[in-house]
View 1 (cartoon, rainbow, N blue to C red):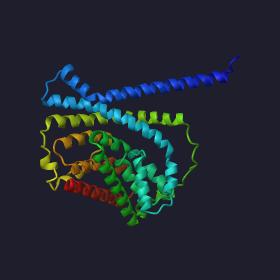
View 2 (cartoon, one colour):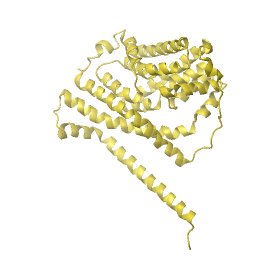
View 3 (cartoon, rainbow, N blue to C red):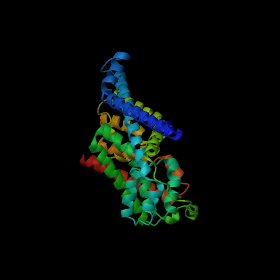
View 4 (spheres, rainbow, N blue to C red):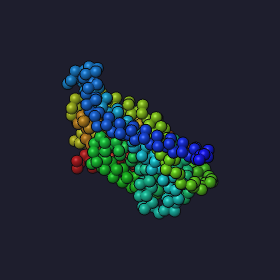
Length: 352
């Protein structure tokens, strides 16, 4: 019996898919094994291969660096891949349709939850804002999304869980969503739609027909593309952040930061927010620094306020948003979010 060319091609494609699946499965298992042995590997590399002496500043810094770099990057790759697959189920057009016509309060909650699972960066702020506004999403609801998306993103949550445990991750998730919901609702009550640049409302929506659902192989491909694009862009910042954290870990005396970043310093949280706003970083890069600060005596509320201000109120993001928002609305946006972050920091320092 002679096989037809189509049958041969189909069999060949099936074999390639099985080979790729086997390769990815082996890579995943190897990554899990390496992840579980990172502490031993980092200690062996630091004190046997280099070799550095134990109980020294340089040795402690190097061991921290060699342990955290692969740990954070492995977590980042896994999270970005999974979320890249999941995002194929929630397209921007589907989010617009679900939020369009929603009243405030309920719409703010839904928009903030969407923000957790939606890719967001400064470069995407303008098209996302335009798309939501032209779809009829209320301004306050849109701003809840814009606050939640960078501040409570899935990368931050999983890294916080991996480094600090579920308690800190849950606190960050709950407070971040609360800030996004309350700030968006508050701005919505102020009726500042006239403070949006007029050309935004004048734009026509374009073709919004949703494409056919992707096949499972396409969803997996989307996960791989997300890893290549996101991890490929942020890994230098991750390494830099861990290097800063390693320096703090090795050279800053224990409890040194308690004097000006501890819970007893009333000005610690406002100072942390003021320092965080001009900085520009993503969650993956700033979390290793947060870990080192906590280890040296900084209070949890102060550190979370610093982290939230860096991620949610970065100066480059504000500059880009100026393309669509007038100064009064931008100032209201920044002030409302900053007050929410201050409240979170002060509350955590008071009760934890």
